[in-house]
Amino acid sequence: MSEKNYLAKLPQWSADTASQLAAEDQVQLQPEHLEVLHVARQFFDQYGFSPSMRPLCKTVAAELSMDKGRSIYLLQLFPGSPAKLVAKFAGLPKPKNCL
Image (cartoon, rainbow, N blue to C red; front, side):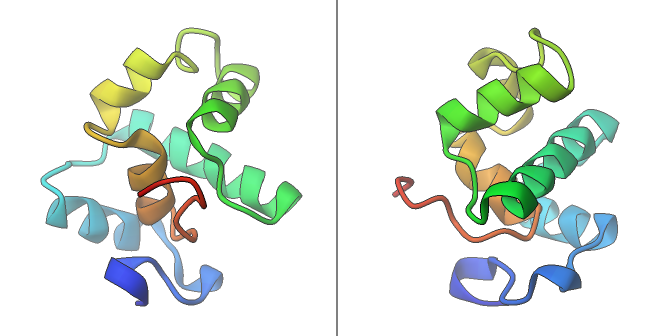
């Protein structure tokens, strides 16, 4: 683990690792969470950086559905800062514009 539990090595990630990281933030991962995490990891593989909120919404909408790409949906799954939590749980570096 690196800075505040963001993974130092991307291949270390698994659904079990994601569940452990989420539990530390009082989030119990469900299939809906995992599908968003997989989309974020695909985004990272394609672009080389973690998606901030706007690209996360657009990518989730394109890959899953318009309803799931809405910020309110992502806030319900990942309360507080969805892009930051998605990156953390997905084993990705923190998005650059997240505090």
